[in-house]
Image 1: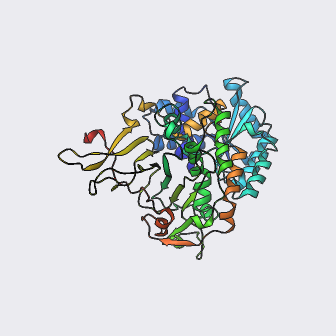
Image 2: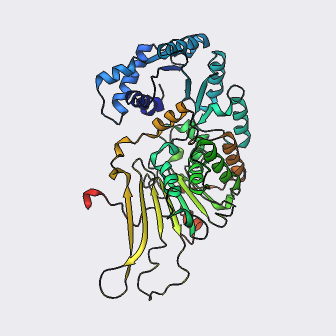
Length: 464
């Protein structure tokens, strides 16, 4: 059983089933492992007890385990088809089938072909894990291969970042409030940062990471998707089709990446990791500037940064507003001393948002300090109802809701935008583990500055 299945998929399916958010479900596991259903259930029990983030009882786990069956791929398509049919009969013959491919990309086509041979394509949907190719040619080939058996509306290319409650809050924040949408454009916004540093190292994933690197692993699949939510036009309705269309319009408007606007890095010690080539040029860090060439965003730089072994683990969007065209405040008052006003989204599991601005310091004279308004979703009365990212995305796929999923058109356009960088990548620069990356990142963003580490800390209810 893979790590993703143990940590996320099985605990997530357990919660969806026990919370009654879904109709009755049955789970048929299959892999190359030659194990029995009892072995599969024992591993699932351990996974739910160890990784579920919610309180559970032994009785509830036992009830979920009764819905699990296992078939080895070595038994062939007929055995898989029979197991799915038995599971379907248990809950009603009209049940739909959702396939979740938690397999390496090179194994995906063989699995899809097996599903076709087993007659499990009709009335089914399939969730595909990243990466969706490694360049434009491979993405087109992958999509063409998938489309041999599955129509586009059956395919759900998953990005767990967009499954987080916080990512969807960007849509609510923008389009439900008349306060912000009128200033969400180049006239009021100076630049935007999307910052996803990670403290983790490879954690035994050298085989995957050596052929992928930080750009393919994180930017194309995650950060560009977040960028689309930040930059998209208002959809005609809050529905999968209109939202996907507006995201794809953003991707069509993106300028091709300029290698001169990219910093690639590799943490010192990476080449000593097991499975890493001694002269590897794979980047473990990347920072870049990109632009969207449309009326709303022309001239506004978007700065993206992510990497391994960095000083903190964060998921931050920072909106830097333009400063007033002229200041009436005397020199030494403090205005401008702490940079421009910022709207900051913290996309952690508990969503937070902060608006920083200048205000007068109490007392005589005109001294200004940076103040902030903050809200944390943990303070909401319904905070306990938050679904984990994989739970939400699996539930959406069951419903046929593709709002938070990527289309073939979108992913191919992103690889097209990335082509100049992939063809001529800048050299990797060394950086110390648990730093903020190579020093060249400061020249990349000048005259602006990176927003991490924060100038201000998040307030908590315990401190107030």
